[in-house]
Length: 349
Image (cartoon, rainbow, N blue to C red):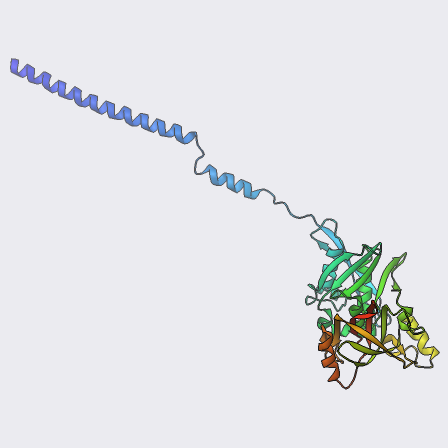
C-alpha cells in the first residue's frame, strides 16, 4: 500500500513537471509573437511603401509653360509674290522670342497649314538652318541673323518671285521682335544677297508696313560713280578681267536691284522692268589693278548655272577654277586698306 502511494505521487509529480514545461513554451511563443507585432507596427509595412510611391507618381507633373508664336507663310494667288498671312502655333515657351519664332518658321508649314493655303520654301529639311542670332553693337537696334546651307536646300528661292516670297516670310516673322534686321549666309550679308540675286540690305519695320527695306550704304552706290582714285576702300561690284598671284585687274560696274533696276534699265533704253529683277550698267571699261591680301577669302559658284554649288576657299583655289571656265560671273569686292579682303561671285540666271 505504501509503495502504491509513493508511485501515485511520483506520477503526479512527473505530470506536474510536464504541464509546467508546456506552460513555459506557450508563454514564450506568445511573447515572441507580441514582440514581432510591435516591431512591425513601428516601421512601414511592405504594403505602405508601394502605396506611398504610387501616390507620389499620381501627383500632377510640372510641364513647361506654353505660349503662342506667330509665323508668316505665303498665301499668294500668283498676283503678289510678297503676300503672306499669319499662322499661330502653340510652343513650349510662355513668352516666345525671336529664336523660337524663327525655328518654327524654318520648319515650314504643317499639313494643316498647307491645307489652309500656306506655302513656303521652308520645310523639315531647313528647320536646322539657323546658325546664329547676334546684335550689332555698332548699329543700334540692328539684329543679324546668320543662316547655313540654305542655297543647297532651296535653290529655287533665287528666282525673282521666290526671293520676294522668302524675304516677306522672314521679315514679317522677324520684325515682330526687333526693329531692324540683316540676313547673312555663313556670316556674309553679301553671300545671302547673292544667293537671292539682290543687294545686301537691312530691313526695318515702320507702322503698318512691317518690311520696309533700306539698302545698305555702299561705296558710291554699288560702284555707280566716278572711279575711286585715292579712296578705294568699300564694297564694289564689277568684273575681274585677269589675275596674278597677288593682284586682280578689275572692271567696275553698276548693279541695280528692285525699283532702281527698273529706273536704270528704262534710262538706258533696255527692257524695263528687267528680267529677274536686277540690272547691270557697265559703260566704262577702264581697268584698275588692285592688290589682293594673302588672307583674302573667296566664295564662288562651282557650277555657274547652279547657285547651290557655292563654295568657299582661298584666292589661289578660285583662280585655278576661274581659269578653267569659259564664262565668268561678276563679283563683289570688299576692299580694306586698299587691298581686296573678300571676293564673292554674283549668281545670275
